[in-house]
Length: 125
Length: 251
Image 1 (cartoon, rainbow over the protein chains, first blue to last red):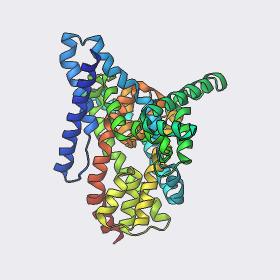
Image 2 (cartoon, chains in turn orange, blue):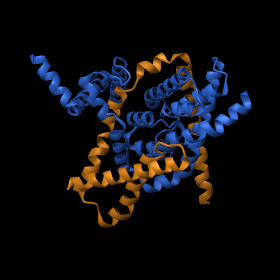
Image 3 (cartoon, rainbow over the protein chains, first blue to last red):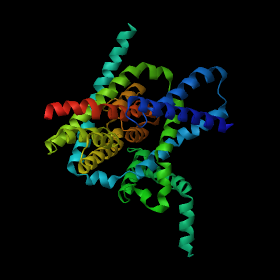
Image 4 (cartoon, rainbow over the protein chains, first blue to last red):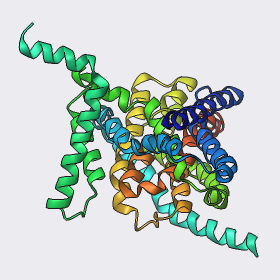
């Protein structure tokens, strides 16, 4: 049944949120540190360990895949509720600082990817 | 009750359902324009996201959701559904890919936060915000619009500097959303490994999620996974080590 998939996804999400919250408290920064990432890892791990052996029921999987496909509509809704006016009225400091700092990071991505690639090859040898 | 009022109250009551319909229609129109007018040069999803940003401009603090009829957009596009659907995308991620680039993903988080903080802070400095508190708050805002105000509040920044830092973070999110599909090829953003590094370097979960959705939805889980740790690391480093360093440098 599809609801089993949705329930399983909810369990991973909530567990991730709880662990992320405790990490935030533990580090003394409050908020939620990596709760979503931990939820994702839980889903990948459980899926990899258990369901590969028992073959996840296609109906159960559909319950998760539906929400995975809803992700793009959610992102569009999210874009429509950003405070675009404030971003533009923050003045040139905000616009230049936001764009320049981010652009530098884009420029560094190929270098890091290359390093990661050669590093992976080295450890294999 | 007049006819309009009946419909109005009905739509407000069913905000989330109206949001489903609105977003569905936006995607439909964007896909049509992308296919028929632009020859697929700009993906339909990217068009829909840009249209959403333009619509948001005509709203207020919460974009279009400031209009009661569209309040449902704030629920559909809020952090609960965003995080829930991002976790769901992990269904398409492979464990071996995650293992392969895990180390570089962690490194990219620290490089990303550090580079963004100092470049953002230096631009604030060049434009007249020369004290350590302002430098730190604006630099933190360049990380994400959450790191900025949290840092500013912790080190006692004035409210105008905190406002600039939030605006800087929102500018970043919008910039990442628009620019990612355009530069994706040039920075080699076409495989899971680079997507993980991208998520760590850029860090704004909303921007990374939207940018990758418009680039290649298959890469979303990898970028989102590292990006979700970015704000936490930013909040950890900015008001502590980075602030102390700036106090030491700027006096």
